[in-house]
Picture (spheres, rainbow, N blue to C red):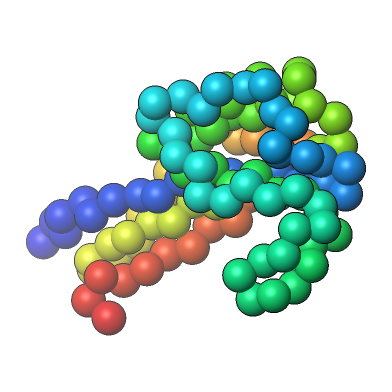
Length: 122
């Protein structure tokens, strides 16, 4: 029996001690959503003072996030960490494919890749 494809979620975080997202002069594309944008010294929701600036963006693909990150990295200083998060929502069996192009894009940015799978039947 073939299971219905339930979906993916793609996000990316840019971080750094000297990274100030509030100073970015880069427009977020229409297919992207800013989930979190905090400068170093800001207070998180849990009340912790952040030592790093962080920009967390959600998009519709790794490629869209990569293109945005390239623009940010060309115009910003202080980014020392890039992380891509892929979440796979499934029923039955979790199959995940990341293309060679997407892997090369993540690698070009020196990014880490985090993959999570969530069973919709739980």
